[in-house]
Length: 192
Image: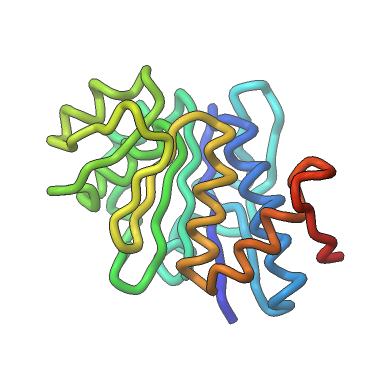
């Protein structure tokens, strides 16, 4: 069984978590055993728009997940300075797909997984990401290196999740998932 963990925290960006949640759960139409969970440090976390979201597991579930997805939001700025929080992660991009939306890249950098790599992030997080020594590709919405991917701009989550699914499964599964959400007339597929 393969698993995906979407990392949430207080002041997460709603669309990052919920768009990834929806797209990743569509993998279940191809692999019924695929499990998607939203993880955090508390029983619930509140989004930047004020929505309380219950967690399925703690962030330690990321350490065994096949895919780890870091959302963005103002909460990332606090977490990158929280050594106790960061120590709870033991990620291994040689066996896990690790990806982020916008300022979620700061968490991947704080964990040391962007050392020597380039990445992208939302414009308001560029300088903070550069402070980790990361070469920021400001004009690209998706930057990938082996099993590490970063995306910028909330709707770039579609491309990021498509890339992550292709890494975890294959391009055919990724194509089916993304085709299922395309606007009518743009090659949509019915996977239900």
